[in-house]
Image (tube, rainbow, N blue to C red; front, side):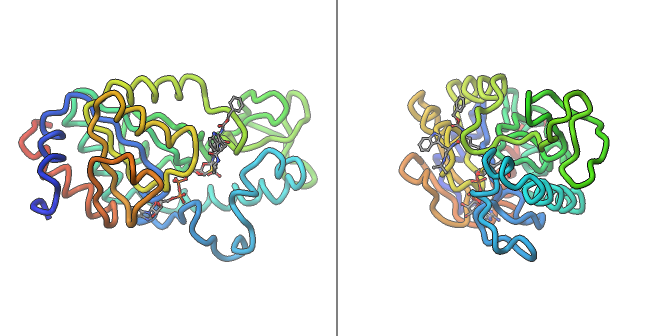
Length: 250
Ligand code: BJW
């Protein structure tokens, strides 16, 4: 497997002082979490995720959107990180400067042991008030879901970033800073369709970073890349980390 990697990628990774990895839903696919744009399954097969992940959908059909997120939260609680998540933990241990920027809301990177993680699109594990955005940790169940904010009575919503909403300010600033100053930027398992996350590899490349992607197929980022590796992240990432950083101390 090591011989299949572009030598330029192995050399840049081996010498890198700062590495950024941007992950998307594909990194969790081998854990059994459906990707965002793959066909949804079971009860949810007839809904379009792009239409459910909006404040308008929550306003219009709060119970439906709440139940979709409750279903997804139960699903991620029942699965485990896969070899791709673990390879990123290993990479972080071997790199002085490492930032993991994830678009995923499933928490699997932290559960695997990654430490410097920026969650750009929030987390299924947290909630906030739909009226003022303040964190909500406990609530009184309403007659029908979603529950109500104990302070103001507005609906409680998942603490994720929906279309048309701003990303967390500090997380976005940290991601921009890391992308602008890294030597290697790896995109893993993302379609590269959603802004502003998809602008990060472009920024990194403009600032001189080597940009590569791991995906099952070419993504929308294809034209931005110095190298692409096509195949499952769960196989490619551990092999890449071993090939490029095998000599680095843990
Ligand atoms: C594998 C694999 C394996 C499978 N191994 N690979 C500029 C131009 C055009 C539009 C916009 C723009 N700027 C903003 C917009 C609008 C919008 C946007 O980008 N729309 C596009 C869709 C056109 N962006 C926004 O609205 C953002 N907000 C914003 O810009 O606000 C401005 C603002 C500023 C100030 C004040 C107010 C507003 C917010 C975007 C939020 C995105 N949120 C979601 C939902 C999160 C909650 C939830 O999960 O329900 O985030 S959408 C969804 O897409 C989710 C994901 O994180 C995100 C990215 O998807 P991802 O991860 O790439 O998944 P997939 O399914 O698309 O791809 C999986 C990939 O894995 C595939 O390529 C597979 O091949 C691969 N794969 N198995 C390796 N085993």
